[in-house]
Length: 415
Image (cartoon, rainbow, N blue to C red):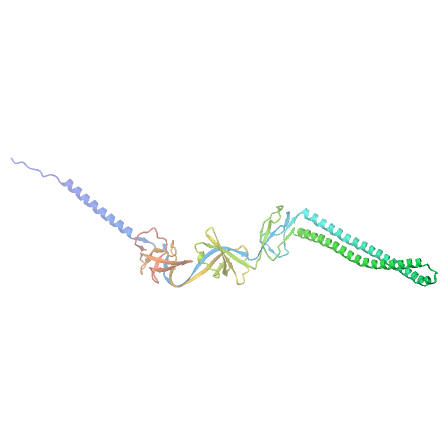
């Protein structure tokens, strides 16, 4: 009897092998597709910013911002302690040198003026009294002089008469000698009186000069008091505009405290701030275009402040030409300083996140503009919306200047 031997079943093993092979094939296909996807990115052309390499001259500029300000400024302060009684003008008002800005009050100054006026009136009255006294004294001295002259004439006549009679013995010798002595005394007294009158004139003149000096001193005190009192009416002092008013109604002010700031209108300068990183490009004498939001004004760099404040430096700009009527102090402005002109260079619109004097990769478009290949480009100076290309690109080539830093693929497709 024959025994039938059964072959072992291999179906299950064969099925497992097929499945493994199939899975490996699928994995290989997925990996290949993933690699292909990573190496090729498709972007819509309408979503990209494109720029073409150009050749020519471009200006290296430094941009800043700031304000127009008066070249001539006058700060008004108080001379004495006072209280703000009335505010006549407010900031922005056009003023002349006689325009009243603020009225102050100080009762003590008024009292000082009145006291000085009384002292001056008293000094003038004393002068008049002095002149009257001197006149009276002069009359007295003149009367004494005339009296002496009269007495001397009488004594001379007596002496002449006795001179004839003494020889005949009618007049005693002793009487005659007394007459001679009296005549000589009167003559001497007349001489002294004349000298005294001359000295009296000098004394009177000096006394009047002393009193006039006192009057002058009192008048000066009055003038000072009046000037201090007049300063309570605060005036502009010159034609311009009231830029700042530093007081309020009823405020008590101390001597030297600021009241207002007056600035000229026709004489203006610009004060702008430029980045510290670019200030080394700025030089005195460079041309500047100042934008007042209404007009473009040409200016010249006049001064560069050496102090750095918040990573910016102040630059002063003057205007050699006539300013437009729209220009006014404290007006916000933008300024562009032309620091240098680069001649006959390659340049392109500045790509996003690209710095000057750096090496950066950009996507260069092919002629069909269907693909873009990543290439390395060396950049030079940047100015405004442009940046210099020193190597890595040719004239007429087009690049994507949008921010594609998130894409690492060597090329992309353009849809």
